[in-house]
Amino acid sequence: MSMNVTLSREDVVRLCERVEGAQKRACAIPKLTDEYPGMTMGDGYAVQFELRRRFLEQGHRQVGWKAGLTSKAKMQQMGVSVPSIGFLTDRMARPENSAISTADLVHPRVECEVAFVMKKTLAGPGCTRADVLAATDYVLPAVEIIDSRFSGFKFDLESVVADNGSSARFVGGGRARYAEELDLRTLGVVMEKNGEIVTMGASAAVLGHPAEAIAMLVNILAELGEELPAGSFVMSGGITEAIAVKPGDSIIARFQELGSVSMRFVD
Amino acid sequence: MNDETIQKYGDELYVAWLERRTVAPLLEREPEITLADAYRIQLRYIERRVGAGETVVGKKIGVTSKPVQDFLGVFQPDFGQLTSGMVHEEGDTIDLGTLIQPKAEAELAFVLKADLQGPGVTAMDVIRATDYVVPCFEIVDSRITDWKIKIQDTVADNASCGVYVLGKTRGDPRKLDITLAGMVLEKNGELHSTGVGAAVQGSPANAVAWLANTLGELGIPFKAGEVILSGSQSALVPVVDGDELVCTVGGLGSCRVKFSGRSAA
Image 1: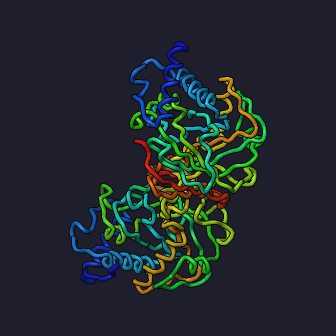
Image 2: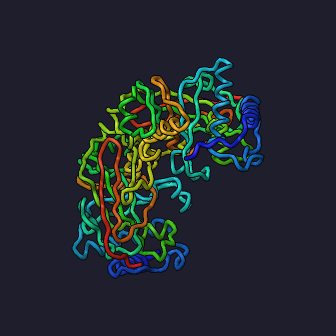
Image 3: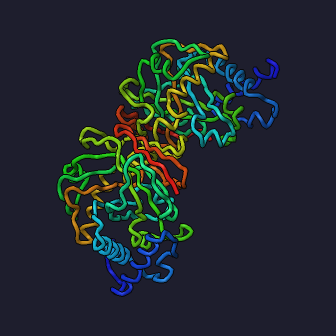
């Protein structure tokens, strides 16, 4: 993957303001490549990192990262072939079993993920699944609430990356476990919406093994000149397809060996 | 349907199975055929196989997932009977020449240690009566041309059962979360698809309870020692010469199967 930046600093700031405005006002915007068809992945990350710089300046705390588009199902759903990453802040976190407002979201969707909490800093390139497992403090189940700010679900990887990988909210919970006590490849997952099963799968859906997605994330970070710090909370990507939610919906994600994570959506 | 017609179609399906060829969908020829008729045709087909020397060793449950039920326009599973000629050992290479238009499904199989006499059987009774569970493959096959099946066609055709392979790792459903156990299916070393126990009627134990109750109503025995294939947790995988499939049930173990030769259709 080339992380070549082709946009001028002015263009990066301009696109970042556009994305930030869409996130803050919860309004959809056309995909960025409509105006900048030559946008590269490097450009997308330049916009994302500018967004992070602004958030941190406003007092947000970065708590970790997310890997996205890591399953065959997600890649097919999005029509892309490369995974992506996005940053997570304290403002995106919601407690387990809470009411989550959709008023400040555009078209929220939920997916089940295995999350990792790191005890050691990891740096790429060349980070492997084994490196990730050795650096993991514990794993836990999580639900990510993604929200693409692009209108009509029309987007491409460059635009999604600029929009921070569609990150919006996340809920960690369930049961914390040592990774070495589990087979992280074969964990079954069921997502129920209003008491009905809407999607299911097993954790191998994420690049064959969720730790593989974390290794990939660390290697992308290396290309962007960063490390994954100890203490990071990292979501490894959706095991299941993303399910649309609206006010009144109640979601429960049940994980083999990891318990469950629940939440409900309100206006 | 009168006994004569039931017998005619049961015999026709038996001969089709014996000669590895397909027949036109029964429902196209007999639009009035009911589900009860279809099960009677299945019984005739099984009677012929038993008459030729096989024994009944268990049951299979089919049409257990919502997508398949939606496709066939039904709201409940179906079942077929497993006979001694369908059994393969793990590690066997299955000769596709014995099949017509096979597809593989990854499942959890139950082996009973007590009889389950429906109606009135619950999922809790199923766990109580279960000796062990194992990962398995069912190789489904259809004696109906191009799999053009409606529910009556597949039921008459023994729920499209072909052959099956049981894995060797036995699990206790009191120790294993059979509802949330993940199912990972690999084809030729690559991830093919994933699933979970809940894909089968919310839990495989629910499917087995349904079977016990349905068999009870039909007066078909369901005995200790029988093998029950509880329903597919994976996508259907068409198989060809040289293919190798491995399914792994989280917290339990794997089942591996290889294929050689060419199927009839």
